[in-house]
Length: 189
Length: 249
Image 1: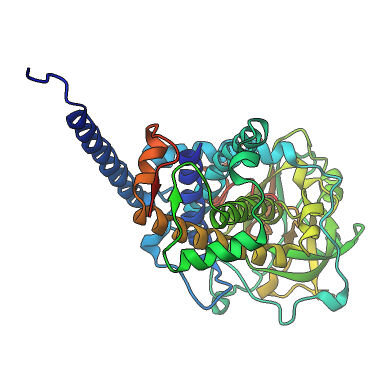
Image 2 (image 1 turned 180 degrees about the vertical axis):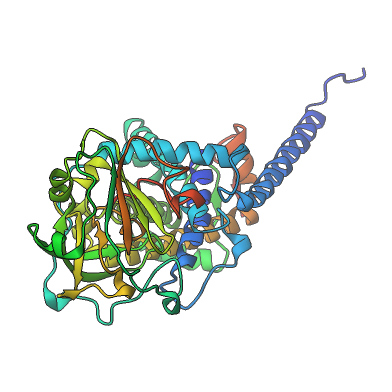
């Protein structure tokens, strides 16, 4: 599920940048080689194709997370004190990582990206269908604002992905544990 | 005794296999970058899959379409000023209305008599202040009034069981829409923009204004309207190049 979602998110982000370039709201554009689709129409084709994959994978994951207790068990509810303490440790690269156990900072970030992804889908649907799904568009203050929020959520998700990938690069063993089963509780720094 | 089975050896062998898998994964991720060439320019390989996914998408959009849902109406104070010019050509290429222009009507209609602007003004008129959303993402609020397309289609005796209404413009543009969207109450053949008769830059003498679709469907400077059973190529100037056909809002 993670890899299907990652692939779908990859397509959404890179084709989204293609669409963004057609009418940039910020004073920056994305270099064309970093985008998917070649031009606006191709970008949109990718975006509305990968959308189904992302939503299907996301819904399956949410059901799995709730039904199996995965969210409750591994994500828990991070306490503010732990988050502050562990963020400090993490920034000094002193936070121990135990395979299979998420620390408070991780939990907070995973909640953060989960909520951001869900909101990105909802804002995305409201700018895709501002008439048919107008009640959703109005919820975000209309088309123009919903579009900016959608953009902001993209930035948030990309920010998460960058941190996520840097951490995986620092602790490549965690990647192995995603593919083959490894003993839980192995601590590494 | 010589040890036949060496767990450490197996483990390192496994690791290197996994590493090879990662490299392969990395390579396929790299090959994804090559997909940036997949721009709907052809109809083979990944492009074929994209076209297919878009036609599936069109069916979902048609299913989702509810003619009773109206585009939000705004007030005069909300109108975007200055209103941005946009077309498939530059503003200095705007064409004047050809002399002797008349709106041609064709396809599955009972009465194919062409229409003048004066005659169109004798039909009931509707006004709207709605948001024009461009496929590029930007949007602006404008004011149009004219003849509801449903009124016009009824008047010319159109067979509304036909699936498409297509538009050809004297500036070389063309587009097409589904019948359900054509009959939606806010879809109008606009004759006025911001309370004044259309000028060439805003699509004189008559243009389509359809707030339930993206901006490129609101064809300017219409020469002919046809009630059609099928589309030419992919259905229009932009559609032929890959813009999503339904493009409903």
